[in-house]
Amino acid sequence: LQSDQNQPISIEADNGVVDQGKQVTVFSGNVVVKQGSIDIRASKIEVSRTNDSNQIMTATGSPVTFKQQLDGGKGWVNGQGQKVTYQSASGLVTLSGGAKVQRGGDMVQGNNITYNTKTEIYTAAGSKSASGSDRRVTVILQPSSTQK
Amino acid sequence: MNISSRMMPLVFPMVLAVLMGGMTFWLNRATDVNVETTLLDLSQPQYVMKDISGLRFDAQGLPVQTLVAKEASMYPNSNDVLLQQPDGQVWQQGQPLYRVSSQEARYADQEEKIFFKQEVVLTKTAVDGGLEGKVSMPTLTVDIPTQMAHTDAEVQYEYGQSHGSAVGFNYDKKNDVLNLQSRVKAIIYDEQP
Image 1 (cartoon, rainbow over the protein chains, first blue to last red):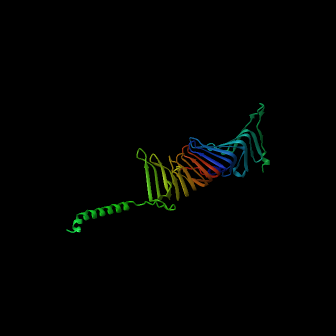
Image 2: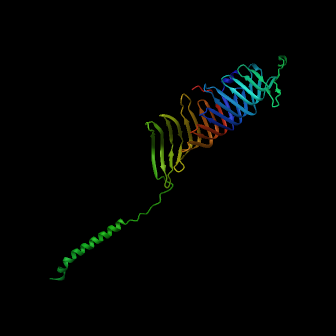
Image 3: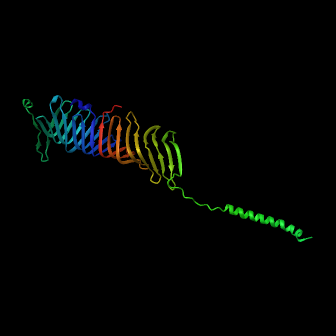
């Protein structure tokens, strides 16, 4: 939801380390982050502050799960990946490592998926597998008539 | 001339000798007092100072540390100092930086540690336009040589509107690292001081 950005961030974790010198905070162990309708679950989350006071959040897990409610009653977007980064300045969420994003009936799968929480647009990129073969992006789009 | 008149010249010095000898004997007895060391009551403080206020300056004459307390006391056979309602502050370049207050504290001389008890509040003053941070807990141990603060108890912390809790923490002042040991909860607001 657009209003998510204005909500406070709630974080719960088993452990937290705040390094004020480096302006880095690391939460680890059953980490749950919520901001409005955004809900992120991970085993570790690192929050760092850039020089221009923006925040970069990097979550790792097996996998990290992410969900957010869409405006206009269009349901939810769910995402997962081995690693998820969120940049507060751009509102971009980048999922990597077996990344998958599902929105209603639509589904995108690839190695890298970038989801813009402001425009609700996501882009996906494949990758080369260990054997060198291409791992292509999979996209499933439901016809709008079936999305009642 | 009878004997007594002949004895008179002898009697006076003899009496004088007896008197002087007696005086010496008595003075010797009087100064020969056995000092019995009476054991102090260990349950009572040996020294008590009320409403103490201490201030330490740096080479430039700026305050470095201040300590105010309702009472400071020391017990027999101990170098530890017990403080009632201590309120200590650390300054830097003349600006207040940290403050620790509680209902009680014990400065352990041997270990160079301070043990704060009851309503302990650790405050980091707002600097460079930042916000004031405050951590409240029932107990806190400060290790002076290593500049580490530690508690195993539950702590509540606030930073502007943001707040949270955890169970146990370590604060390494030299490296400016705060480690919240377990059950960490935080509600973080986008703070504009």
